[in-house]
Amino acid sequence: MMNAFPIGTSALAAGQRGLDLVGQNLANATTPGYHRQALNLVNRVTGDVLGSGVDVASLTRYTTAPVRTAILSGNADQGTFDTRLEIRRQIEATFGAGEGGIGDGLDSFFNQVEKLTSLPDSAAARRPILAAAGNLARQFNSAAGTIDRMRADIAGRVSQEVSTVNDYAKRVADFNLRISIREQGGDQANDLRDQRDQLVNDLSKLIDIKTVDQPFGVVNVIANGAAVVVGEFPNVFQVGPDASGNLAVTQSGSTQPVGFKTGTLGALLREHNVDIPATRTRLDALAGELARNVNQVQATGLGLSGPLTVDTGTTSVTAPTAPLNAAGLPFPVQAGQLTVSVTDTATGNRTNTTVSIDPTTDSLQSLATAFGGIPGLTASVTAGNQLQLQAQSGFAFDFAGRDTNPPGGGAVANTDTAGVLSALGVNGLFSGSTAISLAVRPEVASNPNLLAASRTGQPGDGTNLERFAALRDRPVLAGRTFGAEFADQAASIGTDVKTIGDTQTAQAGVMQALFAQEQSVTGVDANEELVKLLDYQRMVQGASKYLAVVNGALDEIMNIIR
Image (cartoon, rainbow, N blue to C red; front, side):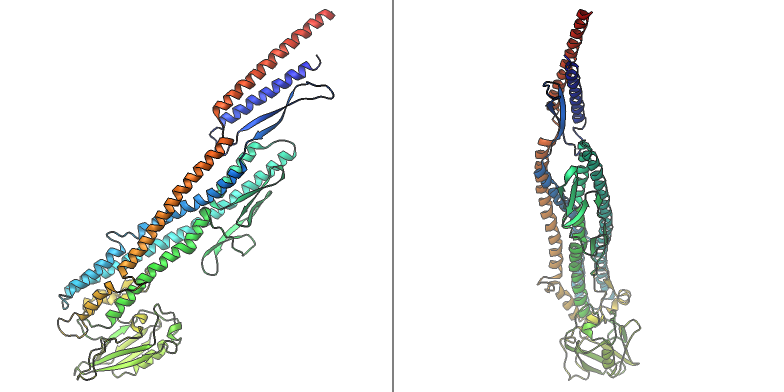
């Protein structure tokens, strides 16, 4: 009878604990990251006496470690696909193949060239060509500018995500400390573990991580060989440009980059450092080839005004005395020759002079000296390190390769086998050599007569326009024409979007299956909890009746004793 009250009160306490736990489970049935818990009851033994009641030995927190590991890895993959798909779709929109896009601009430019071939001497008919060229340049500018802004925005997002990683790491470390203190004191910290593990889950979407269990509920967090959290100590990450201008994430106090490959942060780094520069490089190559080829045709033809009296190249070299192949030119100069025609405007006499060019030894200064030695022509290097050619009074010059006058020297089919005119930007249609810098030269835009439609200078001659038009079908990049190359660039991005989108969908299915598998073990089943609720209710009711009976029996005993 002496154990009756402890037995009854222990049952009441255990039942009440069970009711509280069921209530906790039901209240958090939809709480992200919550793990259901269950009581573990044991028979209480006091000394050598058996049957002294019931105790709550512990609380079970249901987990599925292998599934959770797969989910953490899957979160990183999902973050990668989501982020890359978002960025690739934006770039796909920039490369719009419809009206107003670069592909449309290329077609419009060459269509206008073909239209002018029937009216090569018309100044008015030249304006649509220059307008189309200007629109095409602006389309390149717009696409390149959008891509550059996207890359700058991504750099900002990388900094934000690194800050978020640092914040999560600090909070996980704080939870580790609180959990360790509580569990070393003999308590269980299941609710704190849930909150800590939810932070780890959110962190896994940013970077690919794995966790390593330590004593007293502590977990270490590792990412790509770099420690993110060790016990109660978080590592701090920072981001900055490396020697090549790419973004690199390092741990505080270290210069060794951390190789984040997946997760939102890994995807942003990949887009910033690899994919967007590759896209931009291809776009620049297309714009550069367009400028080089069009300028070469323009430079070696004649406008309605005939030969030139002055022209300044649009390209600046890094140093006027440096060899051309080391002077920072946008296009390579080959070993070859340049034929310069100089005309006496009073008599009409014309001479052709050929200058040999070796890019390994010739510099801009040496070219200026060679050109300056041609009778009727002067040449100099400007303060901006550009080549300036100027005819002496009463003379004019061109690079069309017409026969001498009086005839006899013979026409020159290819007057610039070195490609030096387009490399130096002399007498071209476009300035700039990249998508962002491409523009119609102002002097040509304001004076359509400078558009070189002719090679002979004879009225009605549109032979140079035919050379312009032939560029549409010329293989220029990897055996592809301008239009085909742009279409391939747009298609490549479209393929990326399709592939990443399909992979993202498949990954979402995998994650859904993993979550369902985890929830089947760790999730709260309301029906199951209600059954437990009735069990604990009966336990409390039974213990109450038991104590009432024991109390009544004691009263009878006391009455007998009296």
